[in-house]
Length: 352
Ligand code: NAD
Ligand code: IPM
Ligand code: MN
Image (cartoon, rainbow, N blue to C red; front, side):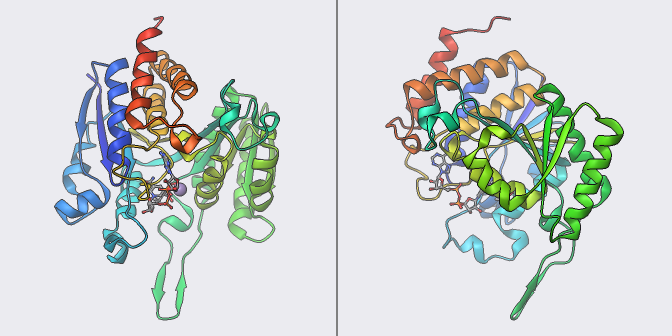
């Protein structure tokens, strides 16, 4: 029996994770689901954001479904030593799982162009996969310090780190439209110079059928919203990918429509890209679509059950049409939307 560890976390995390778990139980009733603590919730009961009990539970997990971590701007959690803050728990989790490639799809489903603030002709047909490097760059290792009036972080990458994430991007492009855009800041940063050189060399060595181009991150920030259809797969380093993916959420219409899959050495980690949304937490109005679609990615990539994943994608598209949530200009609350997904699953059961 496959085992999935769920980590609801903070803010709207528990609300959207509960919705995703209901859907997961519906399409994969045999999966064993075990819930554990992460983030601020874990700090409150265990004094650390990624406690040993949670870490131990990952040992025999086939996949991990995460909600969100973190508190509001004025949360006392933000004044803790950095290693005790909720976000550090998430970073430690990613590291523990060895998940170096974070897949963030940005898709406008046919018939859902009206949810986008972009003109329908710009939003129509958009299907981008952002592959964000997740275990390197300024986020991890390297020298970092804040002392008096001086602070620094270090952006550092090795060829090994660049190649392993680029391979995932090329592999993904092979199943898609065969195009990869590598995003960097090679006109200023040495790290980007290495990134660009290594991605190009790997393509020339092993992925000759892929069309690869290189663009600067500032220009991509403009083009991704003004002409999103020009992109197929985007591969980029950790911080650029973090920022570009929130920006790309504008295209489908909300952060609540952005799921992700983080893949690497062992069990995959599946999580919405949005945060704990303290401004709406506890009100039952969060859009659970990103969490539900993350459960879909868990089925596809983590448990290799693509038919169940397709079922979820179809049901979410139907529910978005019938019951848009408030972030999308509708009135549905979390429960109504989730019920819409479950109803759609029941009315169009699996074909296989
Ligand atoms: P956020 O993503 O939580 O919220 C940004 C805006 O989007 C808010 O107005 C919020 O209400 C809205 N929003 C986000 N998800 C939504 C959803 N599913 N449905 C409806 N509206 C939604 O970003 P923030 O406010 O900058 O961060 C809040 C906290 O979350 C911080 O502590 C931050 O560190 C943390 N965070 C965690 C993750 C994660 O766990 N992966 C990701 C980003 C931010
Ligand atoms: C995300 C978040 C995280 C990140 C934070 C909360 C550590 O913004 O998953 O996009 O920066 O990776
Ligand atoms: Mn982010």
